Length: 61
Image: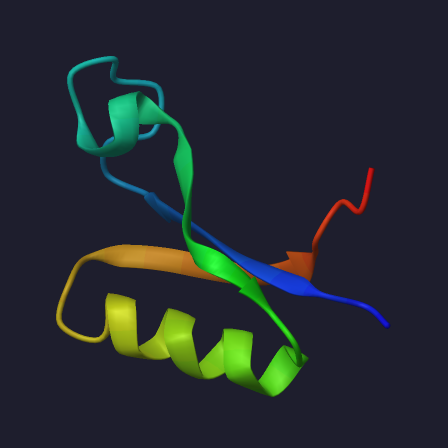
């Protein structure tokens, strides 16, 4: 069964080593069983923050 993860980043700090997430991105939480669970977690985490997020399939290697 597929698992999903949420990747977050700050568009304003992208590329700034001293910015949010070191200018890159970060994976929040653990792996989620469904896309819907991951989407809900991303929306909740970024709700009142200037972050963007995407849900992607977790690497199972």
